[in-house]
Length: 115
Image (cartoon, rainbow, N blue to C red; front, side, top):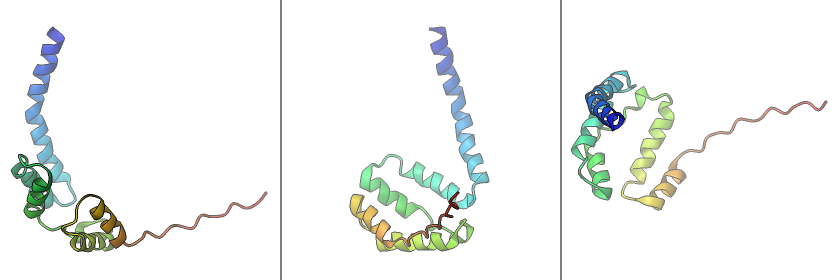
């Protein structure tokens, strides 16, 4: 019983630390402003569910800054695909995004010399 109480007390004391960690994570993020905006959107849309939550998040989030991405061309292609597929859901959305994304070029495998 004492162990259970100790675990519960430890979990409650860790909650403020988790909140600080989220803010620290945004400070270390590639795009800190977008991270903070995402945290605020998640908090604002937290009580909504399903399609209503998705619409709320889409409306609350600022557009992605592809100049900060590791691969800006791929980021821009993904943003165009999301725009084209806007309004679709579930399997239709996944298929649309797959169709709109440019294919990754496969690297040619080196042939092993016959011994």
